[in-house]
Length: 607
Image 1 (cartoon, helix red, strand yellow):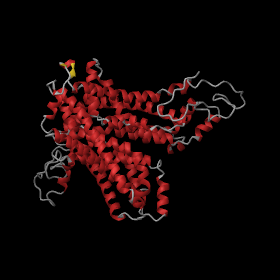
Image 2 (cartoon, helix red, strand yellow; image 1 turned 90 degrees about the vertical axis):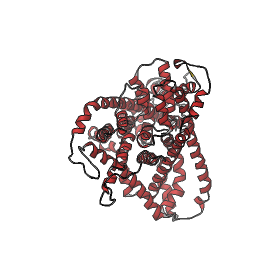
Image 3 (cartoon, rainbow, N blue to C red; image 1 turned 90 degrees about the horizontal axis):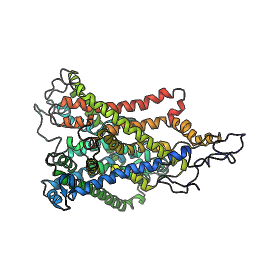
Image 4 (cartoon, rainbow, N blue to C red; image 1 turned 45 degrees about the vertical axis):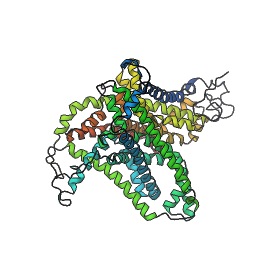
């Protein structure tokens, strides 16, 4: 009797993946004109190996998070024998509640998470509704890869240098327009309301939500819905908001939740752009964790669980907002109005999108100027003279960090690609879509605050005596790279025309041959782009490297964030630009290498 082992997201009974693809009367390994032979058992060979990949992926996503949360719960209630905690109690929670500025930390985390996600969603929806199928839309779509390649820390450092009192923006209007001979007196970054932090999060969340929306548009049949609404006389924005958005939003709900969780518990961007007295709660947790007094780790554990509660509260408030909007808009969807302030909303959507892109590009220009500046007093617009001395000073110290960043990014991305391709191959062979609970598991590392479960993993790492910093960091990066790789590759994998594999199966090819000789070559470009996205995500990881590396693993992101608060902007700019090197190289290879490898098969470049 053959054991029927199902992938974790199947809906229908198990069946041999090639049964519907081979002609009646022929086995998967037989050829035309050859008598039928006994087919191989489904649990053997290629299909038998990859059937375990979905289960392995689910385990890799669930077990570390569950173990990390368990490792932070016990110290939060006083149980950590290694530091003398042998009795359960609530004294550490009392110390946390008595910490100065705790409510301000919670408010900052909650407000920045919700405000940045709401602003990014409004910008993306207005832009898609007003400019879908236009030239401006296609131009922005081409910019998505370069925008996504910019790490969060590099974007935050560039934004701080751009909008600071002595930044490039002030220099461009001084003194001829503003009259400023000295830098103006305003607080940026680090304002008490967290506006700088919200702005820094928005300029990175807009490209991500735009990418997720583009992937979801074909699934909700956006083109057909728009055509039908326009044929009934609806203007473009009214047609989008009334006919497309109700079907689009459920498909991007999980990415939005991931954005809220990231923004409410972010550390690296908050260290650069957020207030410092008091900081956001996640930054405070990291500071208490690295306090010289080891007893502070108990309070840090309690604060990490509090951060989990803050993130859940932010998600709950967003869900309540969804319910309220659904109730209020139910009547407006069917009121028959064909116009929704088309001109003003289109101008607003285009202006906000253009401003977001402009801020990000101007931030990178400011970084380049600072990295080449020898002397740049205010209010000079251009540094004079330009010099490469800053790069020569920084490169010897940055070389080791660059190699570590490349090694970690390559290892985490390669492992993620193997797991994701295996999961999608099982899904394709079974012809069964992913279940909703499996999608939640896939987003789990993005929905749970990293400061909560990573801190618990550090505690478990110490308790078990694990002294392997680099493998631990690679595994920590894998948890965050894998969901993004899946999101980047899943749509292309699922939309591949099944008639190609049916044709190969009719010629007697089995699942392994179809996978290696048909599917993988046709998906070369999407796989490499997903790998480039994974590299960009890994290079930008700050907290997994800081906590799991225990100070023994140095990456460009760690160095850039630590230098951002220093007095030498020139060296900080060099490290921030070096952060861009690996993602830019990854996207360059993803776009250029397939053209070289497939130069005799140009048709494959369209997939």
